[in-house]
Length: 261
Length: 261
DNA sequence: CCACATAGTGGCTATAAGCCGCTATATGGT
DNA sequence: ACCATATAGCGGCTTATAGCCACTATGTGG
Image (cartoon, rainbow over all chains, first blue to last red):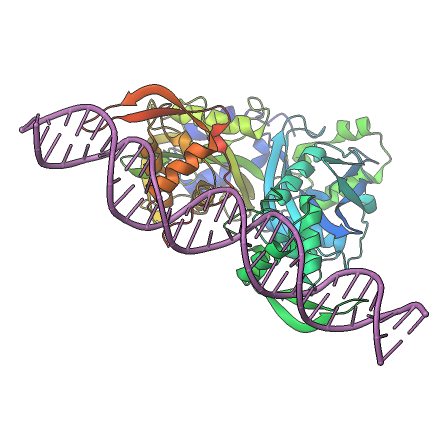
């Protein structure tokens, strides 16, 4: 290949346009490989709360490029397996964590000439939230190691390959932003939880304390939780256990959490 | 081409992985055309307010596929012209409207096997806001006609090609959502405007009336505008003219507009 | 000089967040 | 059996900001 490749998209377009064709004829002659096209990948920031900290999943790359470096999990769109971009994201999530369902949201796409040494590339970044319970991390042929890394204030310990620092920053920013005015953190907890556990989760993500009464009023008035009927006991007063009502996992509040005066 | 093409990405990856290579050797052997890759385009919903209505720019396609149908302006990433996806978006905006700067925001990417008859494709959707003043719409070789279409409640008059109805819906949804709690509509007005004009713009996008006093308090307290010193006169009491302060074009309010009780 | 139209404000109510201390209810040590 | 401790959960006030709506201000044009 190569000789027949028209590498400039505009020349190719003009070439195809020159003749008067029906759409059927046009498509018959159309070949994606006549153009230089960007690579397309999906990369994910999979967040969980573990040991009192917000953590993100990273994998050590087993292959070139950036072999041996840590990166966000992700990979090429597989046109034979994936019908949509969301399919790719779900597939990657499943491959790394074994988790089937959880909160998944597309965040932003990053594209450019310099972000991957293989050439002009586009990555579609996704954000996933999962409960740290019942997860088995699994390596595969593309990663030689998988681990959780705590997100420290504005940055994390490990350096990430490609432009994944920027991708992670965008995902983390989206998460922090939405936690101000949505119920998203319910997706980071197991199915049943107490209001105090939920409040702690909010506080960990926002990295600031939340007033107890305000928090409980807000959540309860939103009517997005239901009591399980069970209590969580400890060495103190037991707490009611709640679970999320259908649709409750992404309720939008009219006002943001404001924080101390 | 064809014989040497490994069309299944995973087989190709395994093929490349088999040998022990340095990153430099790996990249030397790496050829994008060994893989089936999606097409990548950028499509834009360019909004303006004209004749008291929110309108979006559409172009009539001069080429296959979907020749003769209306579509959102957009096109392929040009790897020779564009360093990033934003460059592509700015280029498209400039081509159609002649506008250099205005509000531009990436909204969402749509990818799938069925959305374009040429094959698996990804489009990165952008939202642009421009003032209807000083714009000259211009056709080019890819569009035989360009026009503004009013967005009616939940949908618009013309049918759009590909999945552009969904793309437009996403952009419109993003706009409506953000107008609840940001100052975005300032980007739809000329440089100088009155508070009443700004309020009307909010009302048109939200498709509901906004209370005058609340609106003025909210905007003025946010301290995102400055008086020009000029007045806009008419056949009634003149109104102060304002312009947006630097950074004021995307201020986030802590509370949403709530609407009538 | 007055009718009109639109600009801009005063002052109240309503909603939801922050504050902070009080009460409730379990465990577990003595 | 009782009490110290710890955390759950609530009462009731303050504060900030949106909605309401009538009132005043200031221009044009007949």
